[in-house]
Image (cartoon, rainbow, N blue to C red; front, side, top):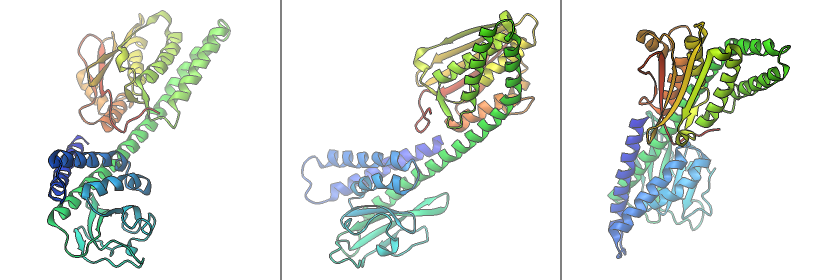
Length: 391
């Protein structure tokens, strides 16, 4: 994903430079042509990105075509999916509209080459459009549509115009590819979340209800409060519309989980939470911290007659966040920790969280085994990642 983003930024620069050169070459520009041309080109190129990052559709194409017209300097611009016009902007928009067949504007092209149509024929009387450059939008070696730049003069188009349109089409295709990668990552994250929920169901639900049952006769008010905490945690864990949440939300429900566990273990479970307030609005995959805390409780507290301590620490690293979940138990063999991160071993929780973090934020993020006595898992994630928003 980071490589693709780097390529996109390179395309923005290349397209902007090409467009600026076209604007500089255009006649009748006399005041600060260099600065104004570059500013206009860069603005148009970057303004396209947030729209087409959502994929190629009529909804995403509509706000993008106006910026593409500025970028290419064409009389009109259209985006197509190969069969119909998804969006149209510029001269002739009184009769060329979104939803119209492509055949009413240009010839159908199926290959991956840039085509120049030197003479257009439109059935509408008075149509000003006379020529066009048709640049394919190619994503992972398949053609998904085309960028069409249209001009009000017949004959051959200029070389710099063809270059700008080709670069702009490459930029559009790169954004569409990014949207598909985002969608794949989202589907993977949802599948892994479903797997984690399947693991939570039998293990946690049994223990939580057993803790509530133990207080029904001796401490009914506390049992009622625990049942409320249990219901809220389950609602949070299984809410289908949530894939990402703020760290503040995740911590709030981790505290509910720990409240239920403290009902089981009493004074045997000691908890310490220290989180920098500046990291609380960072976005994390839902149920990313809870499995680490559950692991610390099971291996650092449950297995020891004297109990133990669980610590949660959130550290501000500037552009990143470091979350540390520790216990003071006997520790874990590094080979077993490596197996857990890969999803091998007795449970899927640790590996599941690691996989979802990497599929969401990239390979530079995820979990690792920390140093110190007992067991510490360290989670690293960015404070902000475009396209990843809390529900």
